[in-house]
Image (cartoon, rainbow, N blue to C red; front, top):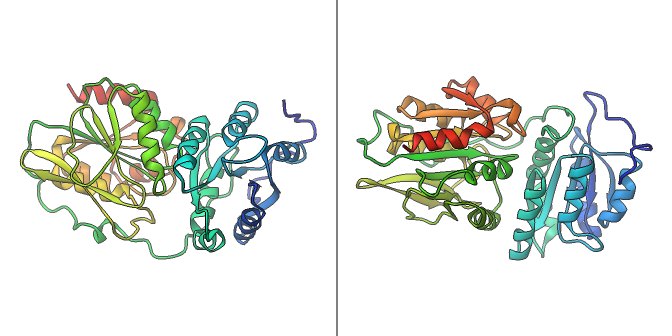
Length: 368
């Protein structure tokens, strides 16, 4: 067990977010430390080349957020995360390589309790991390606000333009296409969403309405995420490809690095997967999916916005509600980060607010 005797008390409100970096690469540790320390709201308190050294460092001072690799010597990332979450739950951001093995291991780490994942390549890592500085700092700030840890400072302003769903498809005008007998569920989530989606989808029976999902996640990781869910769910879960039909008993996960939109093909619904600019600084974007659902499904759809940081999905869910869809938000008590649902409620997009454990039953009732 980790001894709490020597651990310093939590940082006072308004203090910078304290971060511990764990990675066996000296280059990665140095670059991550420099990038995160450049943000005035973040302070890197230590780095460690492997989990065992990190555990010793935790006896001196406990961080607000841990940033860790998953493939490391002496103790693997899954074991490390499980130990942290069992002894003193702390927000953990995974910094993992873009490999098939890395993606599969990352899914195990997320299932063990990690909050989110950012990627790093095998080559050109220094340049890549510099280009991803905003994503890295945003991930740390989102993690610091997660419910597994104490309160942390609010995130500072983000750099760069914030595009809306207009860049992918025009706003909804008039009523959605004529109703059909097919119903569908549209889910949007971000930080904490991997665990939340597992809690929902594993409780659904094999015969359920077709489901379309946007989970903010990097490219390549969504395929491993969908495969893991498919292995533990009664319904079929897959990473969406262009032209996939939205069918009962199937959940389509938007691929990382691509937007997913609903389309109509006669009386059937299909998805369009395409490239495009970041919307609300995300790709895939919940707003893009929800707007397309408002346009092509209208009253045939049910929209749910779940745990996550930011406001992606709030406007799209409002458009769904205006088009006649039923809309729900996950409640604050069950969210890891009550950002996206809170913004959707504030925007007037939400009809009902319910707990995570109530969502599967609500979906089952809607499908009957």
